[in-house]
Length: 263
Length: 375
Image 1 (tube, chains in turn red, brown):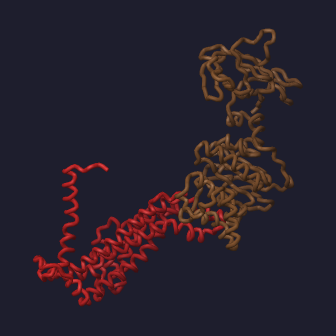
Image 2 (cartoon, chains in turn brown, cyan):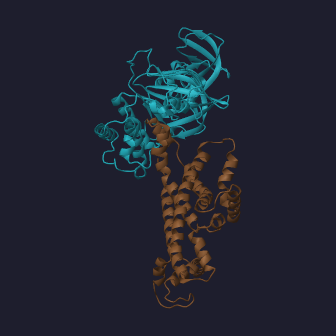
């Protein structure tokens, strides 16, 4: 490996610091014994213990996890179907508008997605709550699943399916026994991506939520407005850990898919 | 070359029959009114340049393409409407198409599991197949842990596992290097002899087709240009195109001057006169091409004795030499500018150094070495 020059080392350190010092401070202060956020009062896990008492926060966390799970599942199914349609049906009528619509949330500012969904729910008289947030998150994350799965399908060797049919496997069974297992890592990576996106979304959630359905990011945000409490640091640390695990898992899985699918 | 193939089935009931089959793609006719019979137990090669329709023909047999017109019979039954998963034929793919998520054993047993064969039988068949392609002990490996040659053998075993009536091979050796490819050719021939299964192979490599096949169908533009044994195709090509496609050849264009029982005399465009034997039924005045293979031309450095001047002799200067080791290919320019290729076997060491550039040489060939082509 090439040795790094001093200039490179310094820029690398500064870059990493820029990205991770704020997070590091948050993590360190979550173990602060003092009630004052800016004063170090010795190592303590008391704020983690305090979380066990904070029922509204726990409720918000459960709501968030539930929404993330359901919306990620729905987005995975719909996103995979969208990817299959885009790669397999060839040049059908309306392909371009369909692709544009699938990928729109990818480039659309979240505020606009959130606002338009809010208007929609109001217009049809849909009562806002957990269900609307779930639907909104499905819309948001579907395109990410579609991107991941479509890139895998693009490099998929169609002769694998022909080989399966040639060996006596009807089309639907071929899809289930050959296509699906081969693209499964991409689908799993898409699911985890959707899950973590839903978990940390605040913009769309705050547009589409209603009374009684508070997600964790919304809860944290509203508490911080009244001043940063040490418990929040503890919650955020746990949150970071969960997100990091999910994202690392997703990248590990998608790296496995990228390994040449030697045929 | 293969031992002669003796058809043992009823001549009216071939294993495969294409009956005036046509297949069109948008504005291209890939297969055009093609009729062909392939016999049971035969090793048949479809040979042709890329885009000639040979792969489409194979894919129609596998069921991935449907004929637009004509009938396709397998053992007497019309299979045009039978989907691939219900046909008693199996295909070995050019890319091998091994299932990456399954082991070697999983791949080979895939087809057997589809037909719900009992476990015990699957196990026995799997062992038989692994022995057949010499992959014992590798059954737990995944495809990406195998070498190219091993993958090729897994693909072959998988296609043979169901004991298909016809095995289809789509450029099966294209991905192997030259040495391995030659070895594998002989292995495939031995295997086919042993199994007695009908093999249909698609290839663009004429050496491969000549070595392995009992019969070759040479295809061009969706039609069969000629069907015959390798020797027939090489020594008695039916047209100028086939003669030029298979191997190397020299053409002398001309007109039949005199026709007799023992052959014809052809005067070519430069006024040279050649004798060709065994050409019954060609009238004087017919426009023909004489095709002579380079290895059938004798090249000498000394002028032949004027009295004993053999027929079909021309003189020229060496314009180019291709030294290939086992033989040398000489391009000789005649007086009128025609270039004739003659190959000489280097039976003696350093024999090739006897002849140099611009040397005057004499070329001659026997009357029965030339093929008279009317089309």
